[in-house]
Image 1 (cartoon, rainbow, N blue to C red):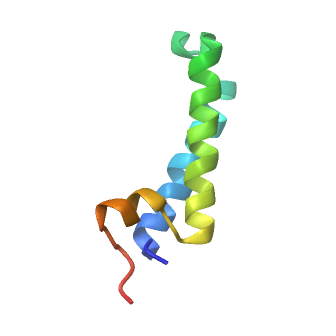
Image 2 (cartoon, rainbow, N blue to C red):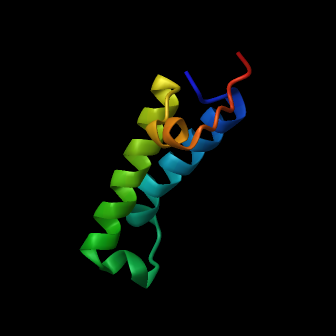
Length: 68
C-alpha cells in the first residue's frame, strides 16, 4: 500500500473523468480513436491503482503518500 486517501480520491475522480469525457463532450480531440482509447485506458489504470491502493510507478520512484 503506497497510496494515501487524498491521492486515492483524486485518482478515482480523474479516472472517471477520463473514462466519461470522450462520450459526453464534443471536443474535436475525442474524434481521434487513439486519443479516446488512450484516455479510457489511463482512466481504468487510475481507478485500478486507487482500488488496490498500490502504484507500481510510485514504488519505482520511492514515493509513498500513505501515512503508515
